Length: 204
Image 1 (cartoon, rainbow, N blue to C red):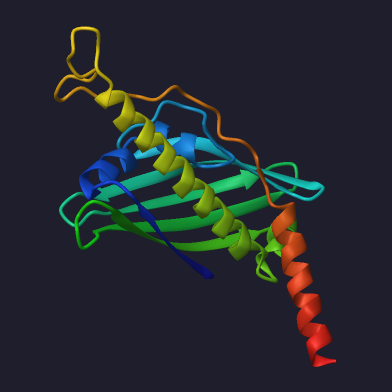
Image 2: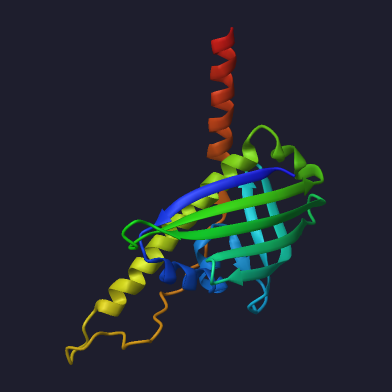
């Protein structure tokens, strides 16, 4: 089973990032191309993931089972999905680990993904395309998560007319909801093709 590893840093303490990872609707808001289709529970969610690969638009609908261990700051998401228009199926396991940085003000996130892709879209599992798409998803997710948490921190620090903080102790502040845009990976495909051409020319 192919495996992908992604690592990124969020400039917020580990407990804050962990709490956000357990809030799946807010996580989905940060994930490009993702949307939830049913109410979520602590262990189950259903949704869709849409990725545009040039003229091909993959739209997977499916469900995930969720496990989380706060003692070790690790979690697992196991999911399956199907793209009916292409007759393709996907299955994957995501394991994430949160580690404190040296000064405990930021969090290192490590994500390991094992996946299988069957059907007409399985061709995209070759040539580094899936790895490139995963890299773009991870980078956009990290940026969106950072922006989301920064907005909440700024909102919580804003004073009210009476001079008190806008967010009383213990209150949870939610940013305005937004819809994650569809992930368009055509630029990545072009970059991969260019790299392959450069390698071939170098060998020639």
